[in-house]
Length: 328
Ligand code: ADP
Ligand code: DP6
Ligand code: CO
Image 1 (cartoon, protein in one colour):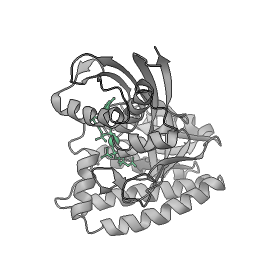
Image 2: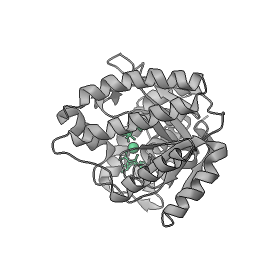
Image 3: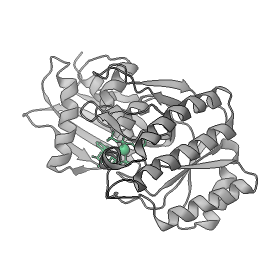
């Protein structure tokens, strides 16, 4: 049946083993496999409906978006339109319950929500694995937001991208939580896409990153399998820092860090030194995320809020799969 209005929700995810670099920029094929935790607290809700005319229209947080953003969205919608007998233009109305373009993974929840909604609107009935290969072509990190829990984006080896998809590794239902310390939630100057491209093209550290990421993903899956939180945390922290190291080697060099970022990382090391296990990671932005045991989250938040009263720490539990909120 053809629907006229579909709304989907997808949660953001934070990579513990990062995706940083594409081997194919058109199909969004990554240089390495990555693994993430889906977060309950941050998400995108997106409504899609058919409209007259031949132009897709895109509203984000109630604001009609400029041409550049519409072109991006239209290219993504086209992937679904070509699979369907329906050729209509689409109105996209999206709301981010996460800061946009600040290194808190808005592109992940955004394209996972949009893809989930379009799959229904265009009556394509793709399974989640196939849908993740479509969503990948909106934003690589979105591949993983199709599922909840710990999720691996398998890089695949095919040139057509058919085996570059997400799989659920584990429900993460063993006392896992993540904290976010918002250092600066303004839009970043260098998008993830530009940052990783510059790194791949110019950083002499990049080949070492790819090799390390391959080892780290094997080790972290073992840690998850053993429910070994300490190993999981140590691998997460080390992998994130290695990714940020590649950027200092780029030409021109760049970094997403701010002075407060460094202070937050230092404080987390101190808290860990006091015997509370907690480990940090950062994406393409100055904000810090901390993986911890859920029953210790309140205690760590209290300590961080005391040290950084203007940057209130947000606790998140584990998010679930992307899903449909309503179909009319
Ligand atoms: P982030 O760290 O937030 O993922 P990125 O640089 O990867 O930052 O991606 C940000 C971009 O993702 C935005 O500039 C916009 O183009 C796109 N985006 C963010 N939210 C949405 C949304 N709800 N719907 C469609 N596109 C979005
Ligand atoms: C540092 O998925 O936002 O957050 O594929 O170009 O849209 P595009 O980039 P994006 O990159 C995410 C980079 C990261 C690491 C990660 O999420 O794995
Ligand atoms: Co992103």
